[in-house]
Amino acid sequence: MLPCNDPDRIQVAFDDHRLVANAGLILPVTMAHRLGLCELVDNHVDLGDAPGRANPGDKLLTLVASALAGGDCIDDADALRAGGTEQVLGCVVKAPSTLGTFLRSFRWGHVRQLDRVSREVLARAWAVGAGPGDDPLTIDLDSTVCETYGLAKEGAQRHNYAGQRGYHPLFAVAAGTGDVLMARLRQGRANTARGAAHFLRETVSRVRYAGATGQLTVRADRGFYNHAIVAACRKAKVRFSITVRQHPRLRNIIEAIPETDWTPISYWMEGAADVAETTYVPFQHEPDAVTVRLIVRRVKPTPGSQLALFANYSYHAFITDREGDTLDLEADHRRHAEIENAIRDPASSAAQALKYGVGLNHLPSGRFPANAAWLAVQVMAHNLARWTARIGLREPVATTKTLRRRFFSLAGRLAHKARCLTLHLPRGWPWQNQFSSALARLRALPLPS
Image 1 (cartoon, one colour):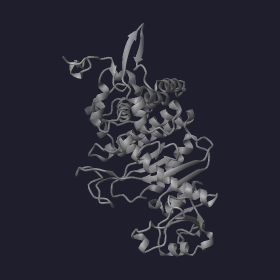
Image 2 (spheres, one colour):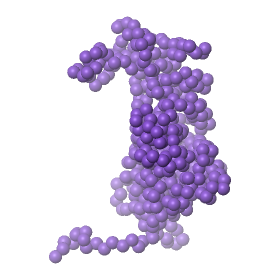
Image 3 (cartoon, helix red, strand yellow):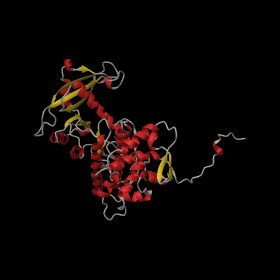
Image 4 (spheres, one colour):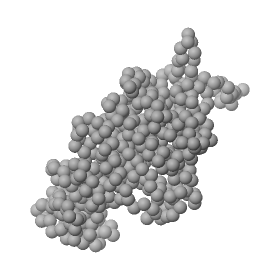
């Protein structure tokens, strides 16, 4: 006799139109509704006579919801068409074939229309409590390689500096919150700093438009060490903290720093790291060259390593026009490394959050503008997750994976009674109180006028 809990005794039938596999998507979808995302897309995205021109708002919201549910390709959106999911999302869920046609209808000008949408959404989200207001804001500037494997993807056919095929997008991320302020797809062979000065100017304009009135600071690694970026910062009255490329003249300046100027800093190996500062004139051949602070961290090589055979220290230097204590500025500059995690997971840094939190690990089309639109969709999904956590759940450090496991992927069942629609969720769910409180907070946000 089979035991009563034997799973072989359970009959399986796909026959309930009321079930919702990702019922928790009601949280970020409510956030999107309060920001007027669907209406913004309908008003600003005009694909002309392209086959995918109709109902762009529904199509984009379908892609965003799929990304939040864990979909990393167009076909994964088909899961949202099952059961009663469409009623929870509040939009007409489109088929993958329709979504593919929609993305392939984009040209570069249409991608810029999506930039206008994301600019407006950012301003609305910050206006209802997600923004920095009058507080200082640090913008982390970075790029990442999105590797591809097909040989026919526009802009990714040739190998880049790392010997990979792929794309090389730019990102501007708000430090601490993981909000992606702006993103732009570039060809894989693009130099790290290509177009970065214009990108930075547009980012600064965007955050000022969104309501950030405090002091802005840009942090970047040595790939962005060039005159155009520093000049853009100075013109926009934005402070900068940029890692320098080392060369013999700079190395001589660093080694000339008196030994008494070096101050020990906390490090994993006691006594292995110090910091000091001096003055330096970067880009001295430029007519607007000025003297800035050069802050240097020196680190002793690990005993027994190959580097220890040839050098007493390795040096890590950056230029800055910021005011403040040397130790504090050096520690803050090192925190720029957090952006590698927003590209990994939004709560900690931006490219890996986008790659592994939503669907940037896969660029689905052979057409460059379609992939640029896909990037814009992933950024919107990423930011909706951030704002849902910060405003609704009041958990600003929650990763997308955590949000999906605890809230977004929650199963439910829709029921009609007395002309009311009720979403029934599992009894005893460990995070039900947080879910209910978050939904109430999000529903209390004002609708856009």
